[in-house]
Length: 190
Image (cartoon, rainbow, N blue to C red; front, side, top):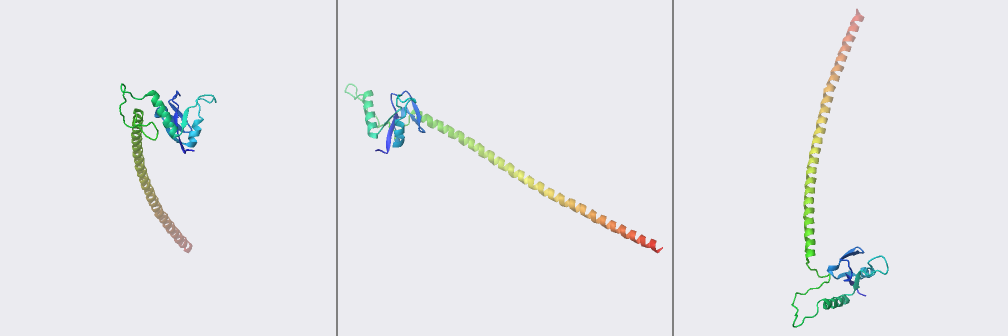
């Protein structure tokens, strides 16, 4: 049993896009190479939930995919004749493993580049705003540190200013007490 299978939306299917089992498939892209497990699951995929509805995908081996592609090409594009010859074209395959630059793919790439550019611009704006906020935060912290230092100094000055008054008051009280005691003694002697 092969490890991979080739899958495509059936040419008779009217859908151009189908999503199943976490994957999206475009009809115009032709064959996709998938692992066998996914291929077997896609083989059961139907257009509608009804069991009699048409199957969505052709699921075959690589050899069968080549045969189907060749037989379809012959139907659409018969062999050249002397009266209607074919012209040589570069080798081309519709297998998903080979990438072609279709106009749709180019448009998707442009959209992705545009989105990347917008993302880059947004990211640049976000990083600049973050730097600005970091600078504001650093300034606010510096101002807070200065305010804390001023508060500490003012507290020290306040303590220093009130401490001598208390000593002066204590000295005044002790002087007053000594005078009072001296007066009491002199009154007692008289």
